[in-house]
Image 1 (tube, helix red, strand yellow):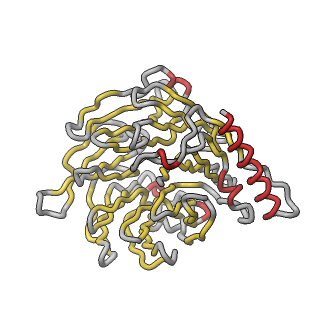
Image 2 (cartoon, one colour; image 1 turned 180 degrees about the vertical axis):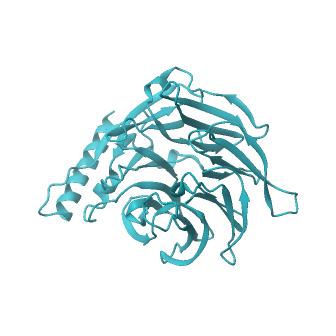
Length: 392
C-alpha cells in the first residue's frame, strides 16, 4: 500500500508539472489515477507474452470532440483516466471527434479518429504524440510488414442513397505517409490481413436500405481489388483465427434480417480463394478470438418488448458449437446497460467488457476472471469501446 501511495504522489506531481510547463495561461485538470484491486509489480516480474497495460479508446459523442484514451496500468495498479490529455497538453482540440479503433504496432499506438479524419500516432509506452495521418472518414486499421491499412468511407458523414464507394489506404509506418489506396465496396468497416491479401467487410451503411453484402479481397502487392465475396447483409466485423479462416459478422437490416456470424475458408489447401462455408444463426455485435474460443456479446433490439436482448457467449471455433450464452456467471451482467466493447487478456484469461451506459456520460469498464466472476469495475470516458494491450 505504501508503494502504491508513493507512486500515486509521483504521478500526480508529474502531471501538474507537465500541465504547467505546457500551458502557461490555462488551468489543465490533471489526469486521474484511480487505484485498482490488483497487485503492484515490477515490469521485470511480467512473463513473456504478459501485457503490462491496456489502452481503452472512448469514442465520445459525434460532434462533441470528446474522444479520449484511458490506460489500465497493470504494473502500478492504476486506472489512468484521460491519459492523452495529460501527455499531450499542447495539442489543439486534444484527441478529436469519435474514436473508432485503437491498435499497437511496432512500439507505436494508433488511434483512428473517424470524424476528425485522421489516424493519431503515439508512442505506445508514453502515449505522447508522434504525428498523424490524414484519411477521410477513416474507420479501422490493421498492419503487416511495416505498413498500415486503414478502411475509409471516403465521403462525408451522411446517410445518402448515392453514397460513394469506400477505400483502403496504405500507410508507411516509418514516414506516416499514405503510399497507395484502392477502391473497395460501400462504407467498408473492419478489415483483416491474411497472407498476401486484405479482406474488407463492406457495410453500405450510408445507403440503407440498400446495404452492401460483400467482402472485398485486395491483393497487397498490386494494391488492387481482385474479388468481392457475397457474405451477408450489412457487414461489420472481420477477424482471422489460427487456422487461417475468417469470421465475419453481418448486422442485417435491424428489422426483418437479423445479425449473423459467417465463416470463410479456402476452397482447398492449395487454393487462395475464400468462400463462405457456414453461417451461424447467432447474433453477434462484437467478438474476440482467444485460442479455440470466441468470446462475444450481442445487443439486439426486441420490437415486441421494446428492450435490448443481450447475450455474452462463447463459441468453440473448432466445432462451431455455442458453449454458453453467458460467460458472466455471477449475475453481475445485470449491472451492464449497453455492452460496447470486449477484450480478453491473452495471458491470464481475464475478460474485459465495457458499458456505454446512456451514450452521453461516463461509461464503465468491467473485469471478469476466466471463471466469469467479476473482479473489479471502474469509471471510463464517454462511450468506452476499443482496447489494445501493451507489452514490455
